[in-house]
Length: 128
Image 1: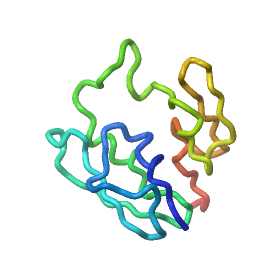
Image 2 (image 1 turned 30 degrees about the vertical axis):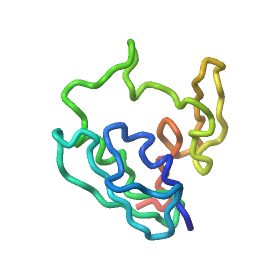
Image 3 (image 1 turned 135 degrees about the horizontal axis):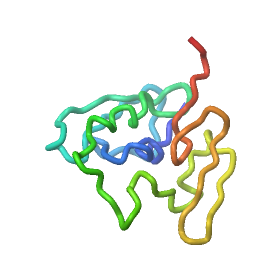
């Protein structure tokens, strides 16, 4: 298995990778996240390439610990409310289809159970 790294931070706007990473990780290869703004929280977290073809645990789990007091905005929209720039940003495994609006943004339509702006948050395949 391999896991693409591009979608890993799509829903975690306040995180970045600690070290430069390749375009994809090999199965069980480890990657580390940190807050983009280290003054908010200096911690780091580890994740690895899973047998689902996605990096887990998802970076979005840690994003809340890195949020600044006031959400940065662009115009009237929150950064988190913005759509992906193109359908190429949608994770293929979790995306049913994508719609481009012609104004430079896209909407990733997720498969059942998948979540996130780019459909990269995996569903729970094994119910507890």
